[in-house]
Length: 413
Image 1 (cartoon, rainbow, N blue to C red):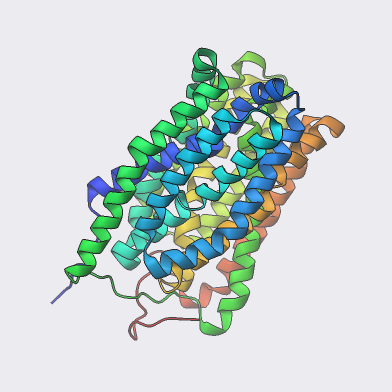
Image 2: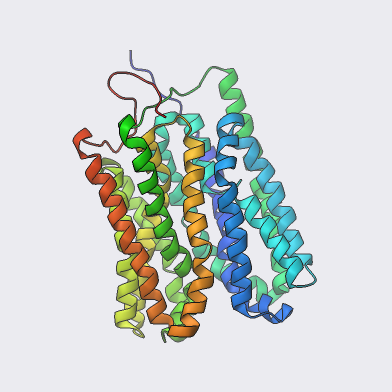
């Protein structure tokens, strides 16, 4: 008799999707449009603000493995609830900050809270509900969350014009408190009730052989970190980058294509990506981003070239959000999945924390195009890392669906 594996209900996927849109929008994507207003208010250069952001991202990356271990031990739902409350308080702190140093402390609190509410813990929550079957639900979640940049870049600009940057932060705090917190509390309650009813997913084994695990973990972390350098440089500086290359007033409209391209990539992945080995999906995702950067440099200031860039970069970024959850699940299984997601996030955050600051510095010294090409070089190295994983796992005919090995369930170290 075939056992139907547990799965997260549709309302929970949609609810988590909403919290990811709000989380990424308020805690990450909003910083770029807010930065000029913050700099003018505090009398700081924008470079100093991006340096403060880099420090806060370093904090988030440093604690990510610890947060992942907590999720494995206590469940992701309760932690996400606490994270929503912390995010709301931190955003209020930003709104009330009287000067740059105080704002920096609030920014550190924001990134501390973000480690508890964004993709890594959301993916871990799905794995705790659905086990190996979480892969397809991760795709559904990222499909919804792909609208974060599309919504929050123009929304932040509109709110700043109407309410100022302090009022904007207060609105963002309200969104986290009134919308995200109830969803995360409902998630915790659902997991608790499922466990009480005995609906617990089986432990699934990854496809990596035990002797491969340590090396593949390090190669995977390197790939995510290198991609994070390019991704964070471009997404934080998207509007300013396009302006620096002469795209002009069309830059905001072009940047708005980034979010729909992310969503489109996830729709495409739902159609055929699940049949593709996840390391090779990572290769495709990592290749699209530097390709988009190269197109932008070669065609600037053409608006059409900029549109192609936004579409390619959005497609790659959208696929990469999926790979961030599915590749560790495929390679290493569900045992310790939260901690491994924390390691992935730490590698990406620690490497990319300095990228927006360094990109801003390099752009001021060398120009926007050379700075973008240097960032794209990191993306090319990431392609090599993921291709190496695909090559090393080829004898096992790596399946895109991370399920138990034929000989039975178990765990790997």
